[in-house]
Length: 199
Image (tube, rainbow, N blue to C red; front, side):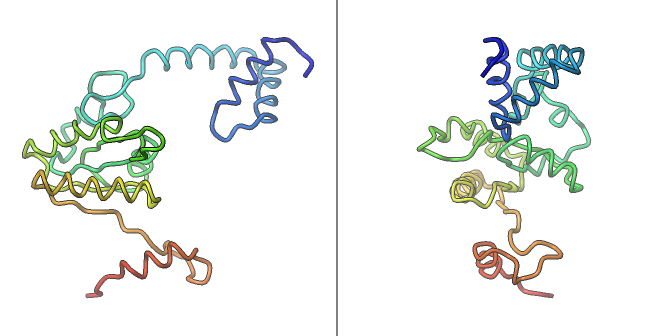
């Protein structure tokens, strides 16, 4: 490609973002250089600050600039209920879509030995300690319904029971407004197998 080595580095750096292919990264780089240098400089400055200052909350492992995040320090959250999610993305989705007012624990992944993600990497010893302190009554398991997510959920159920905490799992199945003929086979099979008594 024509251009400078630095331009190539910029394109490669943008290409590391999820969902950004080579062409998209090139378009972004050209846009910033051609039309939006001020915002490019602001992006670079904010990105540098974020990489240096944002860490993990010591209690829930969510992203935070402080030792404890705003959710963990809030006095309005129910400390008896703890929801375990795979990533901050899922935490944000639950916060935006539901009225959930409990606490969280962010795994930052799911059990996947082939990818080097075991109990230590997911902070499960820390979660075990929280479950054993007697404050939590319910552990809501909100891992994704993938093979690794289900394996992680099973492991979390065992941890909860060992700590005397009631484990619950998010419901999975036919989406609201969905039609059975368009639901994929795996989702339909799971929904059918998890059917519940109607009052």
